[in-house]
Length: 294
Image (cartoon, rainbow, N blue to C red; front, side, top):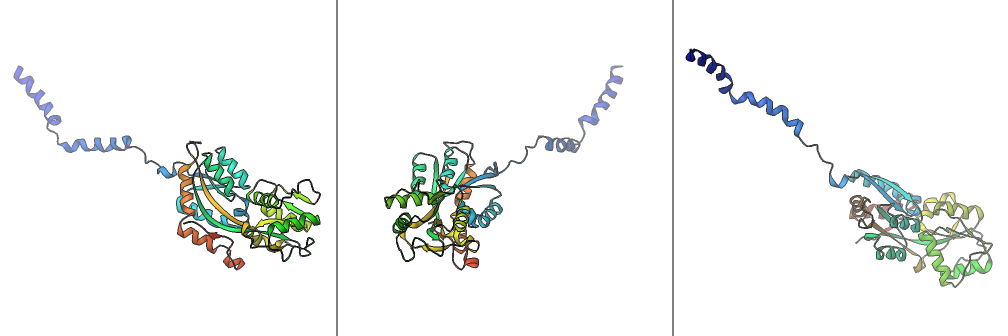
């Protein structure tokens, strides 16, 4: 009786005990996808959004309309450009509200770096400041070769002058020249502050037949719509250098330092420096900026 019972029992065990290993393969195959880890986003694009705080001259001249699409296509980042005066751009960096800066006020930039708000800083390009005014030239400035002498003549003649008045790099340069001339125009009836960007300030100066200080790039880009002429150019103190600065992640851990560093490297590459050197040649017959990256 025991023998009869054990034979069926053994026979019942044989199919599972002796089944070929291949029967286990489907089980393994169906379980693998469920346990597979999702593909990780590349570290450089963990945050694909980048905030660039910059001066209005890079925007008003049209340069950023060329550079930003190139950067976005090359890297995959999406750039939010905030075009304000250099002082405001630096303030955004100090408060952690921007990832990377493109500005043009060397002394303020150096103070920014010394305070630990910036991590990397490099020269990008330069152009120059010029003094423009109406063809009638009421202050009789034409032929003057010194920016200091120009402002003295404007002051003494009481000719209308439009200042940015916005703590921008252009405004800082203007105040620097007034200081060297040992003159303070504030409070004078002929001295007006626009509180606006370079393009808007040029428009106001044109409408009011006034003098103003501007970067050459913005002036050339908007010259067709202005009744203003270059009154003074070429004075060495009017050199206008631009630098790129990454905001220090040790001050603001939430800033997109990877993206900032990508932009920093991008704008200083030989390829993009060449783009900068050629910008404006086709339309204006001269470059609006000159490359400076080593």
